Image (cartoon, helix red, strand yellow):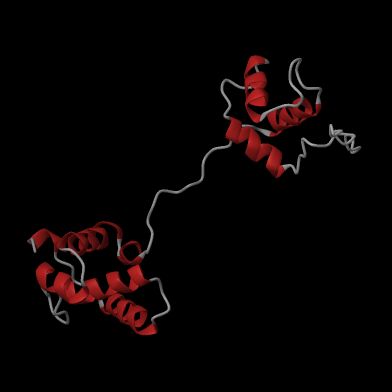
Length: 168
Protein backbone atom coordinates (compact mmCIF):
# COMPACT_ATOMS: atom_id res chain seq x y z
CA UNK A 1 0.00 0.00 0.00
CA UNK A 2 1.50 3.31 -1.02
CA UNK A 3 1.90 6.01 1.63
CA UNK A 4 -0.31 8.48 -0.18
CA UNK A 5 -3.28 6.09 -0.11
CA UNK A 6 -3.23 5.27 3.59
CA UNK A 7 -6.70 5.39 5.09
CA UNK A 8 -6.95 6.48 8.72
CA UNK A 9 -10.57 6.33 9.86
CA UNK A 10 -11.82 8.65 12.56
CA UNK A 11 -13.80 7.22 15.47
CA UNK A 12 -17.06 8.33 13.87
CA UNK A 13 -16.14 6.80 10.52
CA UNK A 14 -15.07 3.56 12.17
CA UNK A 15 -18.33 3.45 14.15
CA UNK A 16 -20.33 4.07 10.96
CA UNK A 17 -18.55 1.19 9.18
CA UNK A 18 -18.97 -1.18 12.13
CA UNK A 19 -22.66 -0.29 12.43
CA UNK A 20 -23.16 -0.88 8.70
CA UNK A 21 -21.45 -4.28 8.83
CA UNK A 22 -23.31 -5.40 11.96
CA UNK A 23 -26.75 -4.30 10.78
CA UNK A 24 -26.58 -6.42 7.64
CA UNK A 25 -29.46 -4.52 6.06
CA UNK A 26 -27.46 -2.41 3.59
CA UNK A 27 -26.52 -3.35 0.05
CA UNK A 28 -23.95 -6.14 -0.10
CA UNK A 29 -21.43 -3.94 -1.89
CA UNK A 30 -21.76 -1.25 0.80
CA UNK A 31 -21.14 -3.83 3.53
CA UNK A 32 -18.14 -5.19 1.61
CA UNK A 33 -16.66 -1.72 1.21
CA UNK A 34 -17.16 -1.05 4.93
CA UNK A 35 -15.32 -4.29 5.75
CA UNK A 36 -12.50 -3.35 3.39
CA UNK A 37 -12.19 0.10 4.96
CA UNK A 38 -12.14 -1.36 8.47
CA UNK A 39 -9.31 -3.74 7.58
CA UNK A 40 -7.31 -1.22 5.55
CA UNK A 41 -7.50 1.40 8.33
CA UNK A 42 -3.93 2.51 9.01
CA UNK A 43 -4.85 4.61 12.04
CA UNK A 44 -3.98 3.80 15.64
CA UNK A 45 -7.09 1.62 16.13
CA UNK A 46 -6.97 -0.06 12.73
CA UNK A 47 -5.27 -3.31 11.77
CA UNK A 48 -3.72 -1.90 8.56
CA UNK A 49 -3.96 -5.09 6.53
CA UNK A 50 -2.30 -5.32 3.13
CA UNK A 51 -4.36 -5.26 -0.05
CA UNK A 52 -3.47 -8.89 -0.72
CA UNK A 53 -4.68 -10.02 2.73
CA UNK A 54 -7.93 -8.06 2.41
CA UNK A 55 -8.53 -9.44 -1.07
CA UNK A 56 -8.06 -13.01 0.12
CA UNK A 57 -10.20 -12.49 3.23
CA UNK A 58 -13.19 -11.00 1.38
CA UNK A 59 -12.80 -12.59 -2.03
CA UNK A 60 -12.16 -9.38 -3.95
CA UNK A 61 -9.31 -8.23 -6.13
CA UNK A 62 -6.59 -5.92 -4.91
CA UNK A 63 -7.86 -3.42 -7.47
CA UNK A 64 -11.20 -3.27 -5.62
CA UNK A 65 -9.39 -2.66 -2.33
CA UNK A 66 -7.21 0.03 -3.86
CA UNK A 67 -10.16 1.71 -5.56
CA UNK A 68 -12.21 1.73 -2.34
CA UNK A 69 -9.32 3.41 -0.50
CA UNK A 70 -8.90 5.93 -3.32
CA UNK A 71 -12.59 6.87 -3.27
CA UNK A 72 -12.45 7.19 0.52
CA UNK A 73 -9.47 9.51 0.27
CA UNK A 74 -10.81 11.62 -2.61
CA UNK A 75 -14.57 11.74 -1.99
CA UNK A 76 -15.17 10.69 1.60
CA UNK A 77 -16.77 7.86 3.52
CA UNK A 78 -20.29 8.01 2.11
CA UNK A 79 -19.00 7.87 -1.46
CA UNK A 80 -16.79 4.90 -0.60
CA UNK A 81 -19.72 3.06 0.99
CA UNK A 82 -22.14 3.83 -1.80
CA UNK A 83 -23.23 0.69 -3.62
CA UNK A 84 -23.68 2.60 -6.88
CA UNK A 85 -21.88 5.76 -7.87
CA UNK A 86 -22.81 5.98 -11.54
CA UNK A 87 -23.47 9.22 -13.33
CA UNK A 88 -26.63 11.12 -12.64
CA UNK A 89 -29.18 9.96 -15.18
CA UNK A 90 -31.11 13.21 -15.32
CA UNK A 91 -31.02 14.55 -18.84
CA UNK A 92 -32.19 17.96 -20.02
CA UNK A 93 -35.60 17.90 -21.66
CA UNK A 94 -35.56 18.12 -25.44
CA UNK A 95 -39.06 19.62 -25.73
CA UNK A 96 -40.49 22.47 -23.75
CA UNK A 97 -44.22 22.85 -23.04
CA UNK A 98 -44.97 24.70 -26.27
CA UNK A 99 -43.13 22.14 -28.39
CA UNK A 100 -44.93 19.29 -26.62
CA UNK A 101 -48.27 20.97 -27.40
CA UNK A 102 -47.24 21.27 -31.05
CA UNK A 103 -46.28 17.59 -31.09
CA UNK A 104 -49.62 16.55 -29.63
CA UNK A 105 -51.52 18.76 -32.08
CA UNK A 106 -49.54 17.24 -34.93
CA UNK A 107 -50.26 13.72 -33.66
CA UNK A 108 -53.97 14.55 -33.57
CA UNK A 109 -53.97 15.88 -37.13
CA UNK A 110 -54.71 13.63 -40.10
CA UNK A 111 -51.85 11.38 -41.12
CA UNK A 112 -49.87 12.39 -44.21
CA UNK A 113 -50.90 11.04 -47.59
CA UNK A 114 -49.90 7.45 -48.11
CA UNK A 115 -49.98 6.61 -44.38
CA UNK A 116 -52.83 5.16 -42.35
CA UNK A 117 -51.63 6.88 -39.16
CA UNK A 118 -48.71 8.78 -37.72
CA UNK A 119 -45.67 6.73 -36.75
CA UNK A 120 -43.24 7.97 -34.13
CA UNK A 121 -40.57 8.47 -36.77
CA UNK A 122 -42.98 10.39 -39.03
CA UNK A 123 -43.89 12.68 -36.13
CA UNK A 124 -40.24 13.27 -35.27
CA UNK A 125 -39.39 14.03 -38.89
CA UNK A 126 -42.34 16.39 -39.33
CA UNK A 127 -41.44 18.30 -36.14
CA UNK A 128 -37.97 18.91 -37.57
CA UNK A 129 -39.37 19.69 -41.02
CA UNK A 130 -41.74 22.30 -39.59
CA UNK A 131 -38.86 23.92 -37.70
CA UNK A 132 -40.17 23.32 -34.18
CA UNK A 133 -36.90 21.62 -33.17
CA UNK A 134 -33.45 21.11 -34.71
CA UNK A 135 -33.49 17.36 -34.18
CA UNK A 136 -35.83 14.93 -32.48
CA UNK A 137 -35.64 11.23 -31.74
CA UNK A 138 -38.60 8.93 -32.20
CA UNK A 139 -38.00 7.80 -28.60
CA UNK A 140 -38.48 11.38 -27.37
CA UNK A 141 -41.76 11.46 -29.28
CA UNK A 142 -42.72 8.15 -27.68
CA UNK A 143 -41.92 9.34 -24.15
CA UNK A 144 -43.78 12.62 -24.67
CA UNK A 145 -46.90 10.94 -26.00
CA UNK A 146 -46.72 8.30 -23.28
CA UNK A 147 -46.45 10.99 -20.63
CA UNK A 148 -49.56 12.73 -21.94
CA UNK A 149 -51.61 9.51 -22.13
CA UNK A 150 -51.98 10.02 -25.84
CA UNK A 151 -53.68 7.19 -27.69
CA UNK A 152 -52.93 7.28 -31.39
CA UNK A 153 -55.57 4.57 -31.90
CA UNK A 154 -58.37 7.01 -31.08
CA UNK A 155 -59.11 10.39 -32.56
CA UNK A 156 -58.17 13.34 -30.42
CA UNK A 157 -61.73 14.54 -29.82
CA UNK A 158 -62.44 11.44 -27.77
CA UNK A 159 -64.51 9.50 -30.30
CA UNK A 160 -63.02 6.18 -31.19
CA UNK A 161 -62.37 5.17 -34.77
CA UNK A 162 -64.73 2.73 -36.39
CA UNK A 163 -63.51 -0.84 -36.11
CA UNK A 164 -61.58 -2.24 -39.04
CA UNK A 165 -63.60 -4.62 -41.15
CA UNK A 166 -62.25 -8.11 -41.55
CA UNK A 167 -62.38 -9.76 -44.88
CA UNK A 168 -63.76 -13.29 -44.79
